[in-house]
Each structure stands twice: as C-alpha cells, then as structure tokens.
Image 1 (cartoon, rainbow, N blue to C red):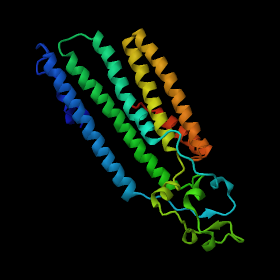
Image 2 (image 1 turned 45 degrees about the vertical axis):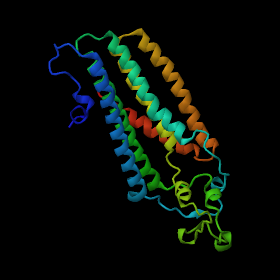
Image 3 (image 1 turned 90 degrees about the vertical axis):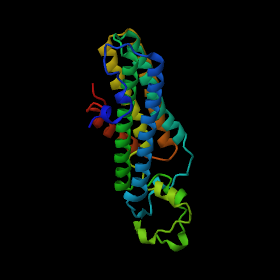
Image 4 (image 1 turned 60 degrees about the vertical axis):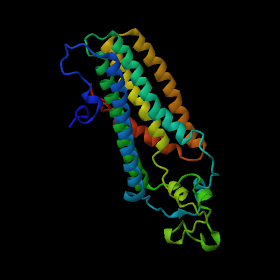
Length: 276
C-alpha cells in the first residue's frame, strides 16, 4: 500500500481535474493534512524506537580491557547536541522540499496545482522520514550488536577498582566489572560506540539532498535549482564533516566508528532514497 493511499495529503486532489481549484479551501486543507500526516508519522516512529531501544535490544557487554588506553579518555559534552542534530537532519529537509516544490509549482500548468504541491511535498518528506527511521533502527541494532566501548567508557563507568583486579589479566570479565556511576542509561550509551549515530544522521540528510536536488534540477532544467543545489550541498557537506570530526574530538567515537558509518552510508546511497 502506497503512502498516497494511507495519508491525508494523498487524497487532496479534487475529483475532476478540470474543475477550478478553490485556493483558500485547498490551502487550509493542505496545511491541516500535512501537519496531521507528519505528526502521526513522527509520533509512531518515536514510540516504536523507544520501545525497540528500551526493550527489544540491549548492548552486547564486552569485557573491559586492562591495558587499553583508548577507553581512558575524559568525558566531554557533545559539540553537536542531539537537538541541533535533529533540527538539521529532520527539520531543514522539510523546508528545503517545500521550497524546491514551490519553485516547481510556480512553473507548473493545470487547475489542481496547489493540491498537487501539498501532496507531493508531504509525501516526499514522509519518504525521507521513513528512510531516516529505518536507518536509525538499523544503526541502533548494529550499535548494540557490536557493543564497542566508547573512548570515554572508564570516565562514565567510574569503576570500583577495589573490587576489580587487572593483575596478570588482559580483560576484566563482565561479571567482575563494577561501575560506581548510578546512571545506567549513560553506561549503556558508553557501550555503543560503533557505528557513529551522529555521523549517520548527518550523512543521511546530505545524501538525500544530493539525490533529491540533483534529480529535481535535471528534471526541471531550471537554473535556479542548479544554483540552489550547489549552495545547499556545500553547506551540508561542511556540516557533515564538522559533525563527523567533532564525534572524534569530543571522545565519543573512534575514527573507525565514523569511517565505518561513512562506508555503510555510501553503500546505502547506491540505492535511490526516493522514487521518481
């Protein structure tokens, strides 16, 4: 079943394409349907993710290496915070899609243009959200399956060395690992280093925009869209590189976590994120 059949926005078209479109009525209906579709999708996705991450999967608990300096880095706050990441990864694509489709709408012909604009814009954004959600679920599963300790693991764990013995040992078994930090959620996060989630989100929006903007520019042939594509891709490439680098400098990830996620995203990019 396609998104057009199960969404409010997918049913905005007037029964007869030759009928005159009631612009004020279509505008109100379009905004309401768009808001409902996006709110419902986000609500369902967020609920399912919290259920998945909270109950369906848990990080593989690796033994703590005794002489591994890579997990002894100090804890630092995120340079790119989660709210900032989500604002860029989820918020800005919506406005870009609406802007690009508005340019197409301006040059379109027909009596049902406004309804088509809302339908196309909403469904494109929902497709983006769907791919973003699927990649997020896959990423969380991989992070838990690998269970790689973050560079700041010991700083977060705050191990009780009076109860842990590294004498003549290469690893401390999980059963003998005692963390004094009462924040179990943060300890859980410290066991999910690979792959980098922030990098995944940043690269996902970059790849989406690359595919979407290139396609729309080629299909329409409008010089303004080519210029828009070039400017936006430069901005998002810079943002993506900045996000990836700070994941390492903030001691949240190893370089291989970031490079590994880049390789995964590149492989996914071989398949088109959106349909024509």
